[in-house]
Amino acid sequence: MNPSAARVSRDSSSVCVCLFHSNSRPSSFLGINNNTISFNKTNTNTLLLNTATNPGTINRTRVYRKNSTGVEACLSPAKSLRQILELPGVHQGPACFDALSAKLVEKSGFSFCFTSGFSISAARLALPDTGFISYGEMVDQGQLITQAVSIPVIGDGDNGYGNAMNVKRTVKGYIKAGFAGIILEDQVSPKGCGHTRGRKVVSREEAVMRIKAAVDARKESGSDIVIVARTDSRQALSLEESLRRSRAFADAGADVLFIDALASKEEMKAFCEISPLVPKMANMLEGGGKTPILNPLELEELGFKLVAYPLSLIGVSVRAMQDALTAIKGGRIPSPGSMPSFQEIKETLGFNTYYEEEKRYATSMRRLSSENVTSNSYDTQPMAQDDTARRGQSSQDPIVEVITPEVYTNSGAGGSRDAFSGIWSRTLRVKITGRDGFEKLDVRIPAGFLDGITNVVPALGGVNLKELLNDAAEEVGGKLLLDFTDTVGDRIQVFLE
Figure: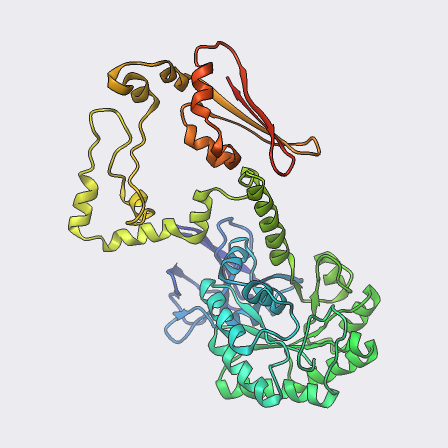
């Protein structure tokens, strides 16, 4: 579908770019709200709505179609996915494993995503993808994922969890869970990752019957879910058999064809040449799979329409958690550059959106209490925080009054000034050097915040920093207060500047 006209409408939250079908252009664009789009005339056929905040880029597509009144809600996930399949080029879909990873995929601008049975088995069960995870667990996880995003999601349906009758139940369950598409394979039970050893497949006849059962389940449900037919026979049997099965799947009604674990670029090309009217899917298994890793342009030249990246998100998550745990065990916290700030995490999870929407339902007494916040006479942080801050604090959290350096300096014990009060004008420098000689941390904090330094380097929790600071309070210039090696061999130095 080649768009021939574009209109732009800006609302309070984003820029919306509407691309209209080349043979049907509305004479008057009225507007967009959360779920519908309106036109003056009823001769409009189909349009694509981009919800990206960067105008001129089409990376998040929602599909709308007019009805007799000229207004209709967003199409189903399956119809949206079918529109993506009609667009030119190859379309990338990272594989998620839970609601958060799916939300991150959407926020990154991808137009759809996959679920990965390998990754869900790892994240939900901490078990290998060797048939442990069940239909019920996959549907439950899938429903959480589809509810978290507005982009179409293609679900990993494994081998349908049984015979053709089980396949029908699986397809109907995935439809109810909100999936736009389902991948069904021809492995025996227990199934496993297609790039691991020992793959076995059912007969060609039984494999085709699974796809026919899936097509029947779709018709019986009145759905338009996209059926992706996968065969693992390339590694289990031969390339020739995998090509034969793919042709048979296309004849049985599959919407997309997928041969897993193709071993060369030549094999990938041979696959794309069969059943040319049926879109092909590629699987770029990262980190050492059997299929060569090609970039999107190369995949498009071969003839692929969809490309999955099954391990990227779960893989980097595993490594990031391992690195964080190593740091914590060594008496540190992860470096600031290795993780988002607390504010960034809250924004990703929707805290700020929640707070804004919550204001619509605030009672008059709650608004009054938030407006009557007053400060005390000591120039300290306000005891009563605003609504946003208080909402992030549970009723069991201790109430902390933060005293500014000026107050601490002017009001020591008994109202007198002591030598330690002058520390507020000094700075502590904390430096950590790894065993390999590379610098891991180099930060500066106000010397008066003794507790704060243990949040940066927990290994300092047992050190009497107050005594060290008292001894050095009257000294001019920098002084090395601590210099030791922690349990993992990192050198930790603390300077008073």
